[in-house]
Length: 309
Length: 309
Image 1 (cartoon, chains in turn blue, yellow):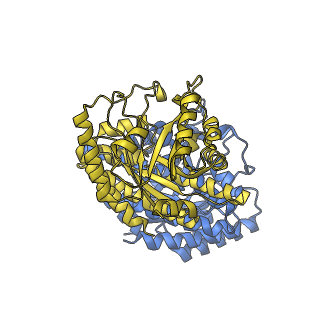
Image 2 (cartoon, rainbow over the protein chains, first blue to last red):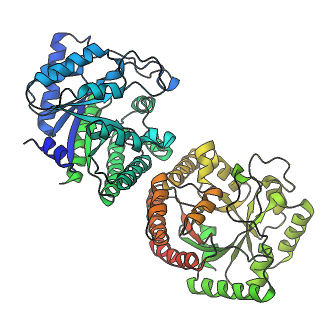
């Protein structure tokens, strides 16, 4: 059996993922082919246990601030994962923004999954909290409809930054486990303390309810410029002030960022080990600059070697 | 020359202090004598380079919450340091709440210091920010009046928790240096990230203005019970949620707290070393329970051994 499913089924530590966004929809066919070929080569070289394919949606008014980069629609992640990257035989974890999706389209996709052979992996993303009148499904509706496809293995997102403000993210994690989530993926971790705080409350509530943890996959991304930093902050990623200062004032912010990611990871890993929580890694590049993509390869290797087991 | 003055004059790392509060004013003379004898014995055993004597004032409405312990006035710290603890020959750093003191009393104390032999050490504490109609001096007034006694060596308080909210504590530190402060003392450090953030902004602004750092003495105190935790939070000390969980759920919170203090110290020390900032330690017991005082002795020894140099 594939290493990823083995770790998911056993609730084991050590899951290794690499994450990509699909190419822009406006790319011409030749360029699309080229991007896919590069991604295939990169993923083959790294040989992660699974590939995360993001669903990038426009989110007008997120955090009330102007988006630092323009939004350009991408190829549908499901289509890209299974057609564009068909050559890659590894499991693909495809994000799906259900908050933007009508019920009929979602149900028909669930039917397709059910009819297909083998297990499929997906992470549902709801509409941002507090956003009224989302055009699509709520997360709960999507989880209910997804029961029709027992071969669909679900993961959920877990956001430490949200936990700082609301202190209920661990309860949301348990509720997602009730809905069938078998693992969690965080957004990029630059704030060790808030991540440890979420893991702490998660561990305490598992203990209180006599439940078992599922793997928490920690996402890391290099940050090589002030523009990438601004984008990541806009996306809701928290940077402790000293760490942001390091990135802003370093002679080589890209190398500094991967050193910092490594030390943040080590800190969180030590804590998770103490709490006997299974963790994993997911490395992605938020930016499409070659230097940052190359850095994500180096970061994947470093974290993967620290992850052990 | 005494090690403390040597390090202060040279702006060196490695200052070691121990901190105590004076006994309650209501204690009978015999009890006062007993407390002083115990403190003298403890300080002699630890042999710090200096002794911090706090000035505990009632602060009605601090943080708008009820004080978890009742306020009881103490012996005047200046009187206690020099009379009660007369046997201790080491330098004493006496806190002075100038925000509660009339100008005449303060000026007459400055005259006394000026007339006295040798160097004296003090840390002025202003009225809490935003508190209008303080009965006493502002910090700036006190610093100006203090110039009349050049043998008075001043330290200032530096509060990382305040920096999180206002992001100007490093500027306040530079202004205090302009006013003659030769070192800083923090409140108890349980939040490594906010302390590193303050040190980061301090280092960057020193660099921007071409100035030299003065020693930043980091205070640490054991926390052996939920009551002590509540008191420390009321005093304005920040605990990352995961760390507060550790203290609340540990089978032995006291030992856990000194282990955590040690790892927080190591984290901040590594960062300060990288930034070439001189640091020091100050260990105190916020509580008067024997177990917590004993733990402060163990903590002093552990941090002192890590401090090196």
